[in-house]
Image (tube, rainbow, N blue to C red):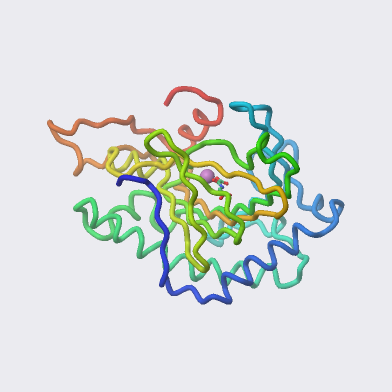
Length: 271
Ligand code: OGA
Ligand code: NI
């Protein structure tokens, strides 16, 4: 409620499952440019899936610089294996194993976050799409940067998702904003970093806060991270839950379809 972000340990995902996810992801990014380009996001594609580079113009005096790979990992009907690397050969197994574990943790999180709002256990998960909730994996690859003072990996933003579940590597870089300051998120081996995203802020009518965050780059070391964005189906309308609004607590957000929310945010149109 205060930070919009927290880390969880003792989540039950075995250490080797997380290490394998990191290993196969790193091996993919260490392939030749030609091989990575096989998975490039098609230029005319409406979907975000595929390999790409984000080189952003200066925002607040800093350029954004990151290579990434996006692909969906759940539900099976949403998966396009075309965007899953075939090299290293264990890429698919490692990602499937991680996703299976992550779904269990996500379900438990949604139930606790529901109870935290005074709702029934199953209410938040239902409100973000239930079994149609989409798990979109992004791998961020931030190469060492000779002038970290002039660059950021990802500029300040909030995630559009319901929640985001992130595994970092050991190179510190994630920062969150609160009370006019940027705070480093401490690296805890084997922990998952959970971000509250915009959709949960909206559903909770502002009780849960979508966290403003950014990623810095390192002078000597390659930083990587594996966020999974838990996204509602595009046509699902999301607005403050009726049980959470009354005369003293009027709705602070409009109800709109998730796809319309995304369109407005990406095109910088007021929500
Ligand atoms: C993102 C993001 C942070 C990180 O990709 O949305 O916030 O730690 N990444 O890499
Ligand atoms: Ni983010």
